[in-house]
Image (cartoon, rainbow, N blue to C red):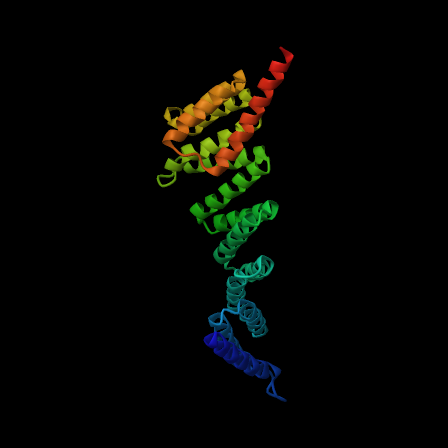
Length: 292
């Protein structure tokens, strides 16, 4: 506690001196360089005191100071520092600071940095279950990474867009993204091994549309995209699930999933979507039982 109080007092003193530099005297005007140095020291003191709100506010003030001296890269970095402080206490302030950093990085042509923080904003909004905003930022990040030819990061962001779109029941959008990534990856020596998993995700989204014929047509398409796909456990699973859906056989559907899951664990996203499909089959079975 004593150390925190000491660091807070030091931070107060540095910030006070910075304010004096910014106020300026007569013909000399504000001294932005000295003020920025003092504000940086003040922010560090507040961080050591774990006073995250004060540290964040000082970094915002530091960003403004850098902007007045036309140091936009330094201003963007200060907004990122502010966001890192606000992460401890406020999602809203974190997002606002990162958004300002993105705008500045875009303005000075640092597209890779802008992409990185768009991705971080996507992750932030996903954690907060604000899925529409998460999709927006992941899409921006994917486009920016692609423009910088950072293909792996771009694909990661595109897959996040597809995953969240499927959660929002926007299955055609998710399918289109997964199929495009699969086509792009199949002839890449580093990415081709991920194709079967991507096609599995696309197939699960096809199943969620509730059309057994569409999934069988999709399996033919996936075989064209990747000629090795029909020999995989992923293909076998999708074919069995489509067949059980066509027959309205919930038990067959469950058995196919259990067999696959015993070898390769189904992640929560797949489990959630497949449960939707299972519930549709179950509802149809109950409807048919009521009619007989």
